[in-house]
Image 1 (spheres, helix red, strand yellow):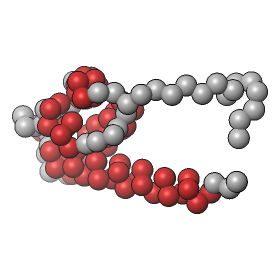
Image 2 (cartoon, rainbow, N blue to C red):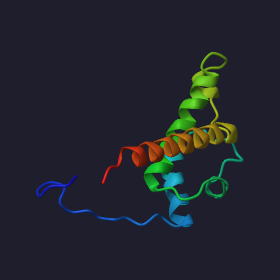
Image 3 (cartoon, rainbow, N blue to C red):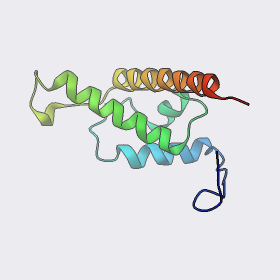
Image 4 (cartoon, rainbow, N blue to C red):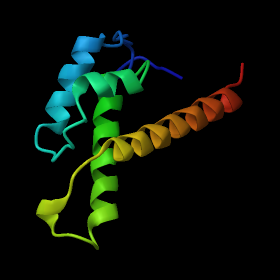
Length: 110
């Protein structure tokens, strides 16, 4: 439901193109210790129909997964965010998105 006031305007923002997503990926991973085979080009080959915010979420989740898997086995400077971490983050993200869409469809009433 919308009412006049704070939320009376809806602005649709188009999904970014591949080059823009690669730039967003670079911004959100510039301080992460990425494995050498994790590149912006590789990342955009793994995903489809995501926004810049979605990309940021996936990068954060991948970093957290890398930290959790290595926190017991190596010092903090030994952490590397791998393709496997990104695959797990992408899988978790797409599962959550699918569940959210299903919930949204089930709660709509006309």
